[in-house]
Image 1 (cartoon, rainbow, N blue to C red):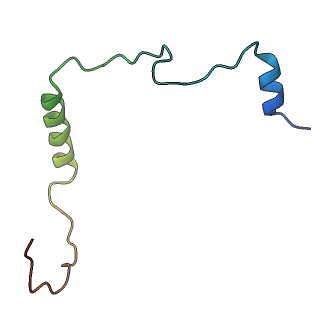
Image 2 (cartoon, rainbow, N blue to C red):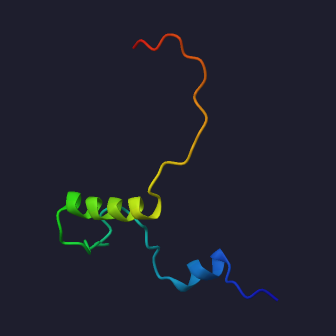
Amino acid sequence: MKSSPTLVDLLRDRSEPQWLVSDGGVTVNVRDPREPFAALDDLMVVVEALCPAWPPRDPFGPMPDLRL
């Protein structure tokens, strides 16, 4: 016994397929009316509070010449 419908059952129930496209009528409301940089600054304050110091990591190794 299968509890999940199959693709054939899902397509049979619809009169016409509904395609998801970029202009398909889906609207996304911005929840934060503040300036984006102010919201980013607030987010970075939280990140600094959770992790005040960078974790230690190994150096990249010997690099005698770093010219571009």
